[in-house]
Image 1 (spheres, rainbow, N blue to C red):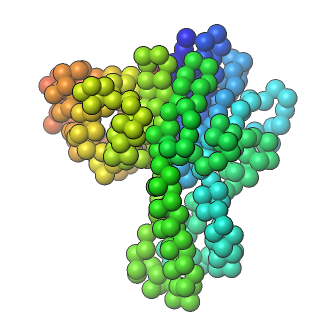
Image 2 (image 1 turned 60 degrees about the vertical axis):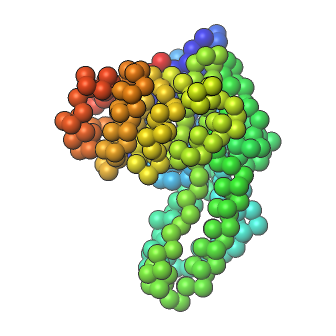
Length: 356
Ligand SMILES: [Zn+2]
């Protein structure tokens, strides 16, 4: 049986391929990184999977944001343009689409966007947000054109931890840990308020920008993959509290209130605002993955992590996709030997790093 994670070089974003299977390998593609990820790395990784006679069982977009969705758009555009019989097959898409999420407000949003000129959107400070929503909807459109099923494992509905069944694919079981239905409902409400305010501000865009009305962030699909005793935790750009609460709700914690996993994908590229030390004391991994560049990961996150590794007396490997200023500074103050960890960097000449 196989359970292997391929961490694709995705710059400041996320892009992973989970390989699993009994006799034959299958793959989940989890996020596609920002735009450059496809041409620079993902295309070659997928070509090799195809050359070896394998397919992609599911594509999972954790949430609609440029550093997760753009590489998938390129991938789907390419699938569309090839349409050869021998092209890579994709078994379906998991994606909480904006239209699905906004339900009856989706048309109202579209009306607002179509009638508002781009200069005004930019003066309102929401051009990027609008582009992101468009990217999410474009992914749905490409998937429809490719005849890919959307959320079929969840009855075609939005993916939420409290309504989703455990999904079995080959030798793995997938438990959804977020978002919760309550989070989706709250977000929908926030979106609607935001949209109303934006619509009212069209004639005075600068006042809207000044109000600093932030766009609610669509929350990440998070999930635990289990193959017998082996576990990998995928956390998207989600937050520690939801992960811990949902692990408890799903009875995944042991008697000490902890979960041991083989691999933990650290949330939100290692941002300190998504984790805390308790998170690392309660979720204990053999290997930690940080897919990040530029301003991530936070030094604080790395400190919490290695202090927990030391206190838990576990020894662990931290895999990073890029060497950043924060990691360099962190290393100077926290020698691996003193904290019992090992740091591995994805080699520059490689498209991905394989972890099992
Ligand atoms: Zn991200």
